[in-house]
Amino acid sequence: MPSTKSGLSFKHTTLLRYFKKSAWRDRLKSPPLVNRIDEGFYQNNSSKSLTPLLITLYSSSNLSSMDSLERSSTPSNEVQAIDFLTELPVEISQLVLAYCDPDTVVMASYVSRHWYMLCNDTPLWKTIYQERYGLPTNLSLTAFSMNTMAVRNYKRMYQSKTLLEHRWRHGKHQTHCIQGHGDSIYCVQFDKTKIVTGSRDRTIKFWDISSGRCLRTLLGHHASVLCLKYNDDWLVSGSSDHSVLVWSMHTFQVVRRLTGHSSGVLDVSFDQDYIASCSKDATIRLWHAKTGQPLRTLRGHRGPVNAIQFKNHQLVSASGDATIRLYDMKTGRCLRDFVGHSRGLACIQFDGASIVSGSNDNDIKVWNAHTGLCTLTLTGHTGLVRAMDFDQHKIVSASYDESIRVWCRHTGACLLIYPKCHSSWIFDVMFDNTKIVSTSQDQKILIMDFGHGIDTQLLVDPPFPSRLLPPPSS
Image (tube, rainbow, N blue to C red; front, side):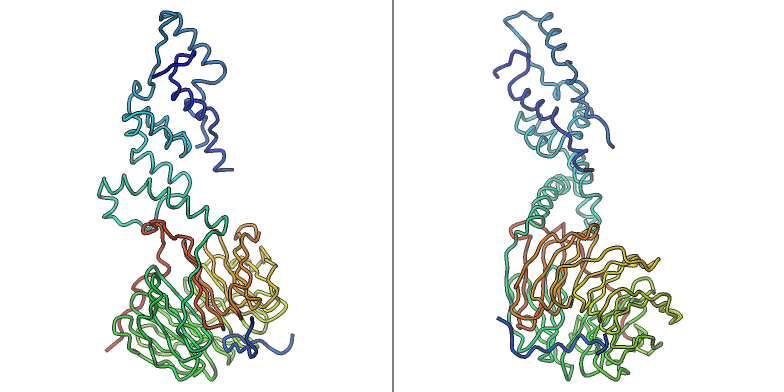
């Protein structure tokens, strides 16, 4: 192996140059349809920061001092190169590598077999992953109990997630389109294997997310299917026929029909205790999840209630009267009004702490659920914001302007714009770590796949909680 004048091999000198430049921890901190109809929206006519070990060892002229020491102890024509990671105890070598950025660790693995072993160490890649992405929350215990699986997973997980992050940042995706409904598609939900949609053609359809093949069609509503939600065991849907249907996800049959609304059901939500529905009749109804018995009716809005969502027995509602209301579901009492939009609201999302709303004033607002204060206003859409979804970092919105936008949840900056991705109004949108799925009056299901070609099996968080509702009473 050739040596440099400093006494280190060329590979080692190159690697040290990377070490001295590394500031990885600091960087981390650092054509439209003529007749457009939307039955699903209404509004009132009135308005460990430590210095890396190697940088400490080799900075401030330490290299020159070491060179002098080596020259004094060895003949001038015979300079000795030291493989410091091999000479050091394994625990210290692993600590050294833990201070390196991932690119440096990958490069170091090519130096020798011993370095390869050190650089592919399970705890090392676990540390690297957690430094950037935090502790994984959705890996099975079985995977963790298998050492060989864990070795393979942490490095692959980091590489896959980094590539996925790059694609989201730069808007690189593959687009797929599914067709099969006979009219406008009002609502959508999806998971890792399937997409479920509800349409103005009165049907609910299940689609294979990979092939786009229609798996089954559910018939039960007598008018447009305006909204749906599902988990592993149950599907709840609302319709212009004024009813809410509860379906078994095992038999795909109607378990019960909930009636009481005097107009179309515009949105539904459910958990293990409640089924909630809202309507054009300006009311919100709560039903017992196990028996289907009506519990209470929430009133207060002066216009159609277009969207609802609840968390921890607190329910938020968005109305055509341009207000948001927060209710205690146990008492039925309105806890707070949120006023700020200038026109009717079409959609709302709630995670227990933050509320995100979309309106016919073309704006998206982020609210603090505890204080009632608006913390962000996102502007850019040129039509009604009909649907949206959000997670810890992003907000994805869909509009009558036929575009989909991706926003930073923390700053409100618009990160990505997909103009004219549909040829008519967009009615619903949902996303997860790898995909954005949207539906429209153009009768198409559009899939933007950011995870194509990536092994994302261990990266996709469950889009819904499993096994929420108890079995129906006999």
